[in-house]
Structure formats: C-alpha cells, structure tokens
Length: 239
Image 1: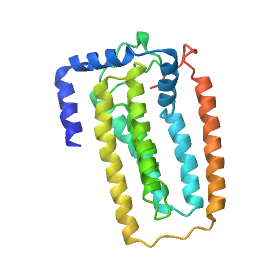
Image 2: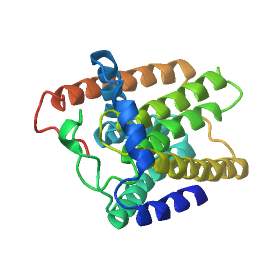
Image 3: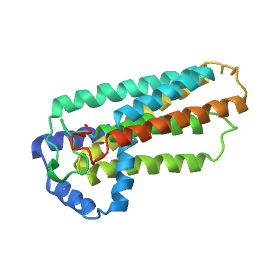
Image 4: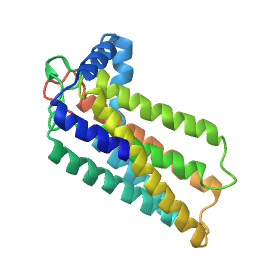
C-alpha cells in the first residue's frame, strides 16, 4: 500500500504520462501479431467486469451450497471492495488513457489504476487463496498458486498490449490488488481460526459435479461475451 501511495503521488506530479510508461508500452505493443493478439484479448476478457461478476456469483452460490460461509463472504467483500476502491481512486486521479486510435480494445474513462488488473487479484487471486488454504485435502497447491500468479500477470500485460492502459496503471493495481488480497486473506484466516468449521451437506463427488457444471456455465458466458464484444465490432469499448 505504501508503494501504491508513492506511485500515485508521483503520477499526480508528473502528468498524464511519463517517459518509461511510453517506452514500455511501445515495446510491448511492438510484439503484436495475430496469435498473440488473440491470447492477450482473451486474457483481457477474463477480467472484464461482466465476466468477473458472473464468475463471482456462480462461485458464491457454490460456496453457499458447500456451507463455506466465510469463503462466500470473502468473495462478496472482495468484489464489492474492487468496485468501490478502483472507482473511488479513478474518480480522484482522472488520469488520461493512452491514445486509443490504435488500441485493439478501445477503453474509456480514467485509466489509473487498472480495473482489470485489480479484478484479477480480487477474483482469481482470492479463488487461488481459498483453494490453497482450504485444508489438507487440497492438491497441488504450488501448481494452483503458480497458475494464479501467471493469470494475474497475463491480465496485467494484456491491458498494456491492447493499448488500454499505461504500464504504471498496471503496476499501481499490482501494488493495490496484492494489498487488498492480503487484507481479505488475513481476515478470512483469522476468522477461520476462531470459528469452528461447518460441515458440508454435499459429498465431494456431488461438489465436484456442481463445480464442473458452474464452470461450464461460466465458460459459455465468456464465449458469448467474447462474441458480443469482439474487436470486429466498432462500438465495443471495454472500460
């Protein structure tokens, strides 16, 4: 949080863009090609607010069905905090986005901090944290942790690649998002230590079936969303 504050104050005094922002953005965007375009656009779609909210609703329903009350509460708080924190800071900073003329996915509104990058921490980061900390039955915690970090990094990089954000916007959200995730995770861990765990009414097999069904529903939504907001549509603008 201290690093985020230092960066935010620095950007206030340096103006809309800084030299290293322009240089890094140009270097990242110079790597554009059709295959990488598709990968980066997909990464961006995974943290569009419509996709994140839908995923959070389905995940919360699953947690309620499993009687994972604290996990469900953590998810709700994390997503609400995402909206309030990012929206509040954007309204204060009013930072201008990069030139959207050549952006793959044109965006509008204030650019600092990156909402997509913060959402990656608030949703995917929390999911990884809950899975890894769920108990002794958790499998492959290092793999899950590595995949979560890789996904968050891909989302942040994609925002620079598609031309929607400056690198410092993504860096600011990395500082802010990791701090928010740590806060939610620490509170969740503290509550779990003080409160007895609730038993689930569903078997592991039934839970897995429901998890697969919800993931499939979410995947269908992502496909439909990607079709509607395809870059081929001139009116598509991802804030």
